[in-house]
Image (cartoon, rainbow, N blue to C red; front, side, top):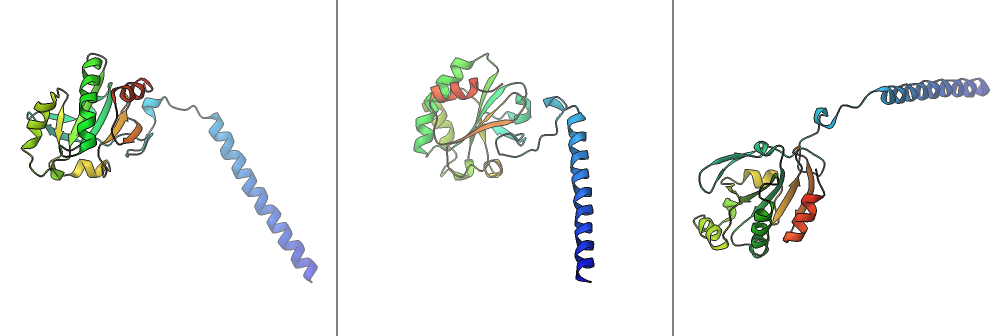
Length: 188
């Protein structure tokens, strides 16, 4: 009697394995026969991790203009989160300004998002920009929502975004001009 039960269990196991193996190989055949859509047609997940589409947002600049990240499509973007009181941010800003001037006309943009809710006095932002001679767009995250979305918990935090809006690198800490150039030149 035990032998019959063992034989039945063995046969059921072999049949189950056969069905499983067949379904696996059928799926693999389907995958290899499918043509992958070009990058622009792929459904890329939105998020703040490398390889994901950068979440879109719209913020007001220091001079009152509205800028949307999605308006930067076709450009390489350095999305930088900073505050006026942050020593590494202060060290990074002259490098960003030099880089920005050098890249003028090269379809490269810097969007410097000030974490306005972290400022002791938001009136200092304009003075900071003037003192450092910054000419790239300064966006104001007045309610802290964008900084939170982009997980800018330590600053400066920068995202290197390619021409298709895909995050290619996240940098926590200050960058110098050379590092910015290398990162921008490494993406399409």
